[in-house]
Length: 397
Image (cartoon, rainbow, N blue to C red):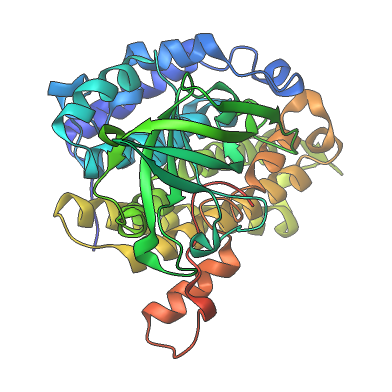
């Protein structure tokens, strides 16, 4: 199936590229070096509408359909030089906003979505725990009944956006049966609630402008009005979002792959060695051809998911394939670009080493690719392919 962008989508792409090139990532290298969250760029994204692309207009968003949202994110990833900022936007959208869109009551949407769209609220997904990792059924954070509400106890880690977040989508155990899907519930927890402690920030290899941290819930009182769905629905609430996370979060990767391809073609055509352009050597031209193949296949997988979601159809198998192929494809493309540029690729001042550092996280977050292959095999009917029923979520772990 071939999906061709409409004239309106192409016009939107041009607008996003012009905006991102003019307004975003002006000091991306310095922000990366200092692991600094780019607040001003976040504000600019909000003003341009990025933070509300998939949100209906009645809640302050742009109301883009899934395929248009996918294409918009691809354009943002292509033109914005700060991969960490783009990753923060994606965590905000697919770790928080999507939960409200799919499962929030109208009151919850009215209360949270306008702020999440205008940038005054930063969203995050507080899922992973020090010992639970990819196995959501093994988590130990509890939500005990307390009058009309709940009290949360536990520690969440590897939370992207965590140190700067205002709203956390949190999964906690509301029952005592270990491994029971119906013992988990999903909550909207705000950073200003008593007992929410942002313990520490976690330094990391790449995507440094997206802060990652540890958050502790020390008897945090959460009103029942902040429950997403009903008590015991945390597992299906979570699983209903993973096909969005595993595909839409990787749309900017396709844009980054195109940017790296163009950079590599330019280097191959202008850099001369032994009296010839680099591109005249097959050892250089063939890896560039592979970049193009990965790019086009990645885009086809991505648009397929966007088309399916626009039709209101399930796309878990397609999203899982897209996550694996695109995340690994970007690593290969970034690695090849660094090698093609030689010493310049390795030096900090040219930015390519940062592209590779940022890309290396992709096969880990949104569920490690080793787990994703087990999930895909299970979806294909391979008996016992995914032992223990592990389901992976949104943060690196």
